View 1 (cartoon, helix red, strand yellow):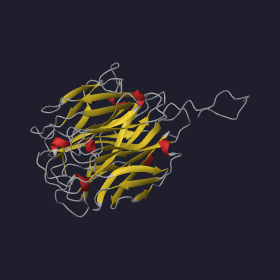
View 2 (cartoon, rainbow, N blue to C red):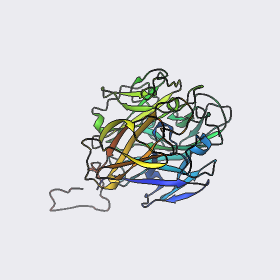
View 3 (tube, one colour):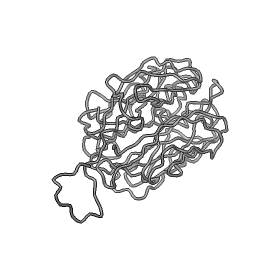
View 4 (cartoon, rainbow, N blue to C red):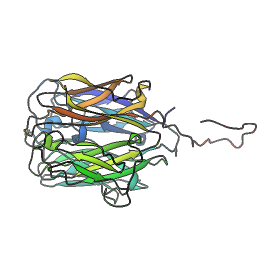
Length: 394
């Protein structure tokens, strides 16, 4: 049995403090984390009963894994919105080569007038093997022209703190983050920092240090064995659709990624910083695709093609989604382009949702197969000796 199990969710979230009970429970909250399948901005898909332009107070939701099988939602607004994502659970043996440990399910506050905030994380053994997963945010900023102030990047500072940052100042925003340390020997973790994607796509070199620019070169060896996690700050002044969304995907080099706000719209601008984290494991299988004109729908579900070559025989809990989305247009008709998505049928169906249509949407995506992450180094306890056995397969 694989050491990681994935459960997807599709939830209509209303009031602050509402909860959702997962089908499966983790052995502890340090053995599970949340992934929002909504691109770099980590937002909802918008309100379920409106196609009007909306602000970040309505569009953003903070998710907290508050118990071994419970998600708690944090809101500023009470309008019901759609939220889609995944929960990853470690189910393997302690100390196994595919193990991860969640060091924190935390909230970082960026105060009014400030550009960043930080929170100490305890228990980290090797910060270079940590990945911060942003699980949403909460703000009272209501204008659909305020998305520059509510587009947040998360990173680690190398001193044991998780940092939430924006490229400007504005009203208070609380950012929710799961900090995951990939402790298992089979995991190799790389990091990148993108700060030159304002007017053209940037080729970002990957490095072993969590700051993304130091340490040594990080090489995946093969992009089909690596998963990409990324987030991005807003622009210093641009508030538009494509200005606040990035497409992040492998370069032809196995030690570089492409970070772009201009693939979807050449006029888009973003002078903020983007952070990239890459999780490589030789037993992982990631099969990617590109759709340059997604039929997204007005508050209705759509589907996108299964990547060519991706397996269709795995169990539903053995496949996840890598998902980066953007749209043409630099106006403030938010949340066009902010598609939320999940795999609803492991035989080949990826479903997405957003509350309004109108532009040309581009999605870079991949099916992530974790079925091969099976521990070969499990420890058997309570046995002093075994005789007459030539081999044991675990």
